[in-house]
Picture: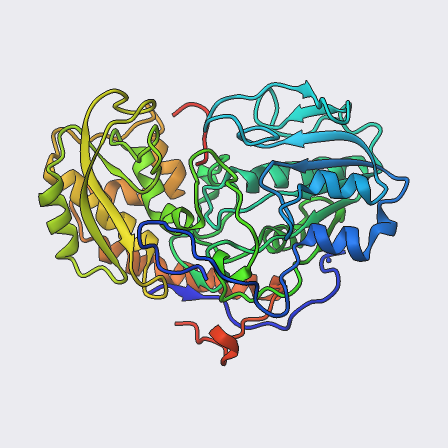
Length: 437
């Protein structure tokens, strides 16, 4: 059982000087917007607070998936609102989301506005003083994935710290957590394993928005008081992406749908092994396997473990790039039949255990002296647990106390109400360059 973030009053102003349906094959659900309509932070800024932008020299950290309720890119909206755009900054995958995971991106110049585009996933991960020299106001609008592995969290944090050092106000334009803001699952990262895929001491599935994460860390000194959050309006913590009524845009070439993100806290752990997590197919983080796997046996094993809300089916696939490119792989695809009951981290621990048990002599970790799985898992405990063949539920259960403690620590920084579904009562709590999706 995962821990849940408790209820908090909604916030219509600033804080910090601030449906989806079950994944039945990943088919989109056509649903009208809830009432009131959800407005992302960028819409609130340009529609209600445009005076903050007009005539000011503005820099923007974003990517192509940062769109509003009308599928318009935040950069367009900011310029139309009167900002003088002087620089753009891009995270992993580049400003337009075109680069594959882990591929370093270089600086360039934007052809539309003629301003420099500074990559924060190349020679540097932090804006330099030179890149910030003409900036009066720094805007950050990055879609979050709801998992600690998401490198945009590190990128936004580094940018906030750089702005704090230069005395530049930093406006975080918040967005909904696409997998919901209630469930919290997994261990809290050991700071000794800090990396781009695990930047802050929080659980794997953290249950926060990016604005809440930065508000929490700003209270500990991140950004030296530069942070201000423009909250989302109309979002409830219990809503996953499909319930917001907002259009979906892929923040990564490997995340084609919000349903993928619900699996991601668990299936991303396969990245730390020599098995394929589906990269090089149209089903990254959904198709898991390798050339040596017996898919029927694996599906039967996992389905026999009684994991809540999910069923596994056998699959065959041939990646066009990444691990096992050009080779026929066999494995499983997890189908989330009940998103409320599904626990992705617990499921991921069972997946690793079952993969290793089937062919222990073929199973291996990747990453050399410091295995990549340790960076993803935020410590060595998961790796040792799997290697020793111990019960995955025992580790998942042990992590619950960490998730509960994090929930208590994060409570003062929650910006959004935790109303029950359909307006009911609130729910009770119970290897080289690091790459994201």
